[in-house]
Amino acid sequence: MTALDIIIMAAGKGTRMKSRIPKVLQRLAGRPLLHHVLDQAASLQARRVVVVTGHGATEVEAACAGGSGAGGPFDLKFVRQEPQLGTGHAVQQAMPQLAGDGMVVVLSGDVPLTQAATLAALVDAAGGERLALLTVTLPDPTGYGRIVRAPGGTVQRIVEHKDASDAQRAIDEIYSGIMAVPARLLDGWLARLTNDNAQGEYYLTDVVAMAVADGVPVVAHRITDAQQVAGVNSPVQLAELERAHQLRQAVRLMEQGVRLMDPARFDLRDDTRGRRAELVCAQDVEIDVGCIFTGRVELGEGAQIGAHCHISNATIGAGAVIHPYTHIDGEKAGVQVGEGALVGPFARLRPGAQLGREVHIGNFVEVKNSILAAGAKANHLAYLGDATVGERVNYGAGSITANYDGANKHRTVLEADVHVGSNCVLVAPVTIGAGGTVGGGSTITKDTPAGALSVARGKQVSIANWKRPAKQAK
Picture 1 (cartoon, rainbow, N blue to C red):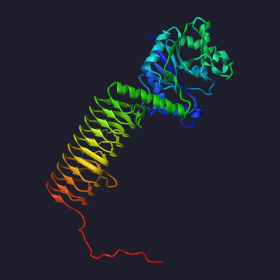
Picture 2 (picture 1 turned 90 degrees about the vertical axis):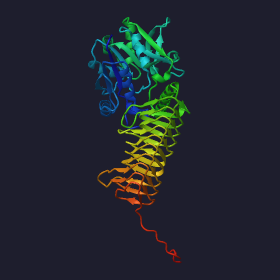
Picture 3 (picture 1 turned 45 degrees about the horizontal axis):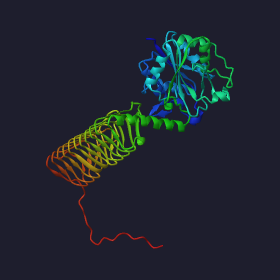
Picture 4 (picture 1 turned 120 degrees about the vertical axis):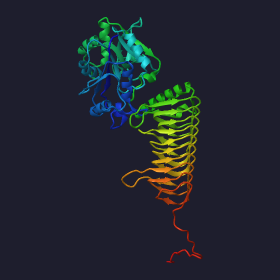
């Protein structure tokens, strides 16, 4: 098979984005646009990828080379286009980095949704000896290069919109900016490019007319899904592609049997550390509206996710119910929620939280780096940090583990069947013995024996006929 090399054009400033961030680093589904295009290169099993940078080159190159979720099993190179004199000029900068024995596929760094199957079909159309263009028919082709065909239907050339006649502007088949061409042919055509046009630029599209003149077949692989070739030039277009991408992911999940209450209000994104978005669902999972999933999340059979939850890097067991407005973020340590557990609403599970079977975590409860055994409950207004909680423990409202001494974290152990009253402070390191009870309002600083009632609070005093201070008259 002919080796494939990829050129990705990523030099544009993106003025209409009105952002200091280079256009190709704007995020779609939590990932830079350029990373999506690098994924396309990986899907083609490319031998080498050359990214042509310009505006924000240092940032763009760092974002690709920094191991932040971009790239694949190919040799990645960068070249800079300075000054920027058009698409043909950009490809001219890249060609010295490529061998002459391969097929070259030209992609755009701001076109994130092209499907692997589409690119594979384009390469097949080129067949190692033809120039293949990816085209699409648009109801409004304004601004795009038009595909000009001979009376028999063969492609003759591409005319850029600003150089097109009125008759040519009526053509609705446009060039997507994506082509596949043998490297040996492309190199020769690039050397013959001129900038004799309305923009004074070197157009890559001029190689089409050169191919025709040289007797090289030019073929168009036409698709009907315009979103696959849509670029991003403004925040509005970025938002449109975000929803298109999310809907595509939602449909795939529903085809697998997931019940989404509203696929238009669903998001699956890379997490903030660049870990790839992946939502794995067993049978009969239900997801309500407004939920955001980031990183890798697994939902067990019959799990129910309430409205407006944010779940990142977590495993949710079968039959668990995550009530609305719950925030679960596993980061590196991950979060595990056991089978049949109930979490929320308005709960927060932080990295290292491990909930056993049928654990209850209620509203405004935060759990961090803690293990809760089967049947443990913390139903409201509480904090469990760096704790080991035994089976059937009941943890009262307003109670906290004081796990940080200002320099180090310490662990709290609640053995099986402990009952902690409301508004207690457990100062770690401390162990509450099995079956023990901590009276409400206590501050516990020492280990307690099994089965004991432990109370540590000031004695209640009542003063009869107490008069409250009164304001002085002015």
